[in-house]
Length: 638
Image (cartoon, rainbow, N blue to C red; front, side, top):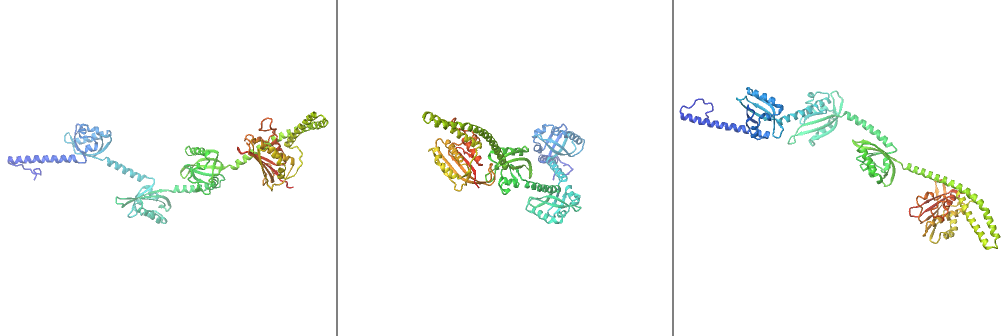
């Protein structure tokens, strides 16, 4: 039995009184020990402070919470640890305590050693003289949790999307925010307790029930549905439902996010209509149109598929666009796509070459503008096949060139014809008197030889005049049916003698080659001139090919009427004709031979004879592979 348990009487004898005092001292010691242990081990922050502004004693929890050592805390005026904004209120609270008042749930902030602040909640008894006794609790975590709770509560309350919490056991709504209630034209309080399916029209309830049942296996379910407004109209919504479970995976509650998608549905409807109109226009477009995203094909219309040589879009969808352009243009295409995708600028129309799926190439004209496709930045590309346009342009240039050449040759021909006639008139008496002089000088061999030289020179001059007249087409021709094969056979021996033994001559006759209406001597001159030209191109020898064939022209071509034609080809294995000289080879007096070794009238004479016979002559000279002259003469159909 303790002497401190309420006993009032003191012992009578001195021995008993001494024992009493000893026992009392022991109990006081134990009491101090118990209180000290409690003071030191309590989780809250206990302290004893003096009115001079310093702590006198602190529990261990102060070191844990603020990070200062006990000695540091006892040496720092505690007001320096208080947040500047809280010091005035703390001073007033201490004065209240000194005046005999209690402190309950007073809150201020204390600085930690690392510089941040902890929220402390204080409770204290009235001061004992100049000593203050108080206990503080660290409520920093609790305040943060309360702040988070307020944030979540505000987010729930003010969220523009409808939010509702449901009980999975009863499938009822336990709480919702105003936005959820507004979808149904009701107040939040009136929605609480409603069955989940009551807020859906009857025709979709089975569908919704099936979707919600998926939460037994999944944590989140999303679907679109209709919700029922109080006045009976339906509201299209996007539903996202989450099932929250405890540690044992048992369902605690469901949270539903509901978004009114009326505007989105209207937009999708308008978009589908717009896309249908766009697709119909694009599909009907005569030019190729395709869409690219990430520099790959995302869509092609029918014309674009035809240009790239595919039957189905799937053959190109997802493939790099640059791969379908010729290597010579790939760097250009890459740069233009970068301008479209990065700078979002359109690119002007340029000519490029695409490589079709079969490996063939096609000339195209390409332009593009930035375009948004399926939410991705891309480009709308327009491709026009310009093959026919280029072919027409090239044909026009060729015809203009031929017209210019024809006009030039015609002008030269008129000049040559006039000169030839005048020379022929002047040469006739010279040749006549030279022949008479040669006869009269029969007794004088030396003088007769000189006269004969005049005759021979005059005859050579007359042949030159005939060539000029043939070129100018001013001669009157005597025409007759001619067998081209027979004509070549007749002059074959003479031709072979003239080209020399170093040139091997090969013939290839078409037995079905038609007769032509021509002047025999002039055709012979054409064959001989072409053969001599080939010989001159093979100074070290070679092979000469002379071939005949026939051809039928269905449509007028190169000034030739439709019909049957006899074809003469003279080809050699010589040095060929340079590309820069080809356009001029039929011009009179043009020659590639050294001065004094050619008149430049051989091929121009051939050209004049062929044109006078309503025919056509062309030449091809593959590089380092000789030349081939091709002559077409109209068949004699009469």
